[in-house]
Structure formats: C-alpha cells, structure tokens
View 1 (cartoon, rainbow, N blue to C red):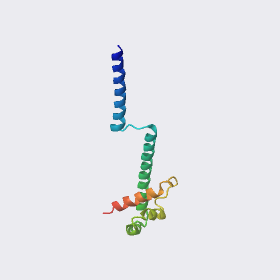
View 2: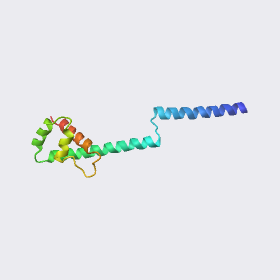
View 3: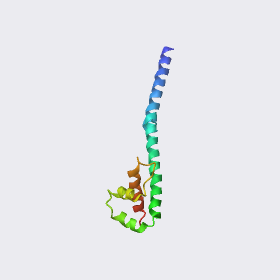
Amino acid sequence: MIKSLESFFLGLLLGVFFTIVIGFGFYNWSTFEKGNAKLEKESDRAVINSLAAVCVERFKSDPRYSANLSRLKAVDKFSLGDFMEIGGWSKFSTSEHFELEISNLCAKIILSQIP
C-alpha cells in the first residue's frame, strides 16, 4: 500500500512539474504581471497605429499636400517625426506620451505610399 501511495504521489508530482514546464515553455503561458505588461504594450501599439492612420489622412487632406510631400521627401529620416509635429498633423490631445512614435509612423506610412 505504501509503495503504491509513493508511486501515486511521485507520478502526481512529475505530472504537475511537466505540465508547468511545457505550459510556460511551449504554450506561452505567462504570469499575471507579464500578461498585463504584454496587453498594455499591445494596446499602446494599437493606439499608435490608429492615430498614425488619422495623421496620414490629415496630411493627405491638407490643401498644401503636394508642397508638404515634397518637403517631407527632403527631410532627413531622423527628423521625420519633428516635421510631422511641426505641421500639426500628428497632434492629438490624448497622445503626448506617444507623440514622437505617432509622428514617425505617420511619416513612414506616407513615404511608403508614394509610387
């Protein structure tokens, strides 16, 4: 009886151990904190992407689109975000924290759409 009880608990212990190792190692299980951090990062990325799309539309609907596009092409790649911020296309009241990321993404999208 004791031998079978020892075997039962050893099997239970090994089963739990391998379930945890396989779950966290291969099936992307995560702790609560890591999961929240990942969700926060993904939601920030979604906000940046959607506001960058609005920025692109603002830029395209500007009456001086052609002149602005010519200037945007001439801007150094490290100053693209600054150009978009100065033009006001990437200004949003809720995005101070993402402003430069939105501006850079907006400029990259516009430049990628040029034939």
